[in-house]
Length: 357
Ligand code: MRU
Image 1 (spheres, rainbow, N blue to C red):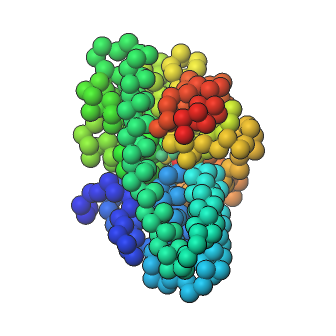
Image 2 (image 1 turned 180 degrees about the vertical axis):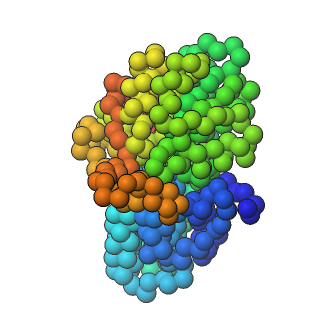
């Protein structure tokens, strides 16, 4: 096994590398992404995954291509940016972060292009700088989410010997530019000395929990236990779970939340056991243009993710397979949504976000 690393992305101007998460935890291997085509590929094949990391890698893949092959005409730049962002958005449709990045960049570019005396080189540089700024902003947002979430949980829970958090999928450094969202809340609780234990689910079929979250927790020496997804109910009954904290791929206006498949069942179970259920997500994962979760497009992934493990077929040949990568948790099962702009109940979310820009 080569040296472990928790950086999902390594970037310097003109050079982008992503940690190939398909190989974790056995091997920590960085692979170059030289442009938009390789960026879209890394996202589609899930070498890089997690809603914020998808948008960051997608946008930086555009930046490296612009650095190595700068367009000569402003019209070429505008077309290239628009087409590239469309292609990156299409690579994985459920997480809204890439789409929001595309909309923001296109609007920013249109505005910059109107400035007097603007040159194609100047515009290209602005696009590259815009993409680079996403890295730092994401880490700042995650630290804020972590601290706000930890404070909120501590204020609303009585757990003198520290809180027990159950989490699902991977929402840590590997899914973001660093620190993480739901796992950021865990990190902040740990730093405050108020975390007793983390329970992470395996997260079938891609095993983000057992391969990636477990990897991060072991790396940071955070006390944690891995369970299979099917042990969640029994764990809630037998262990003193203080709160469930998960991430999000898209939170819509009424608070309905698309996240890794299996999130919905955890929310149902949490309700049954009287355990608060939190979604931790940056505002870039919130899509108030959709009124309810019914219209979120849910990505369906190849059947081999269910039928095979490490390339070995484990399911009976001939069986039909359905493999949606995400589910939608209805807002009535969600206690609050922890964002970098504040902690909001689902009913408060839309106004909360617009009043705290
Ligand atoms: O299919 P994945 O691994 O990209 O799914 C990831 C999740 O569902 C995460 O919970 C979500 O993207 C938030 S990551 C901070």
